[in-house]
Image 1 (cartoon, rainbow, N blue to C red):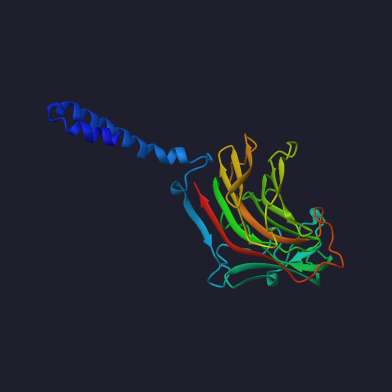
Image 2 (spheres, rainbow, N blue to C red):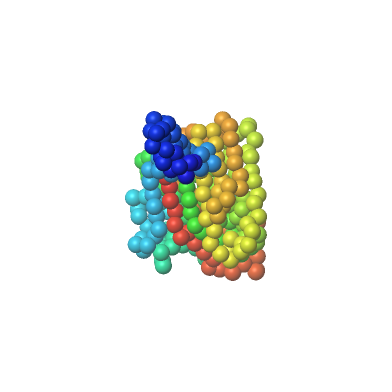
Length: 289
């Protein structure tokens, strides 16, 4: 098209036609530049430039920011667990550390007496951006719509259950979005779930086999893109699952990362399970919009 315009310019007796052609070409180019970003956004979520960064934690400073992170669920301030899952660990702050630019959640076979009066054979670590334990304060970081992205590596040991998930800032147990669940004895499989607000509603789920090195052999990136009536689950840059409809949460939610031991999903550790075992998080990024 441009070469044709150059040829036309040589015809000095047709200046009006030349001008018209050039204006048409310029108009086409401007239209292309304006519309191209929209056509290249295929996920249906908000373009990254329209979002604002809420958290960009790369853990390079060697510390866990207490203004953002808790080391227990809000319902307990002297350690915690999730008894409804039959989990065998008691979460304590000492099992959470930052070293070499990574957040480390470490499980160990070390008996502890929980504040619930029960004895636990294992200690482990968790972090959350939710409401602080033993307080009526609001969640430290919650958002409605946006994205969560983390680069992680899990331990491949029987009976371990690393997870990244979202819970409502209202302190209710539902809805729940599970961005990553894995079990140590099957480190090639990612489990994803949506548990809707209504307990009578079906909970859609997805299993995905990671191609190439498994979750313990190499680092993998997980991202949730959350918009109105839509969830996109992205692993290593590939969308592997999508959920749409009114069941998608539309309220502020916060992030939880934990390394559970035992429970309904992986079953208990056995004599082959090596401790200590660590769930490594290279970075966690949250955007809203």
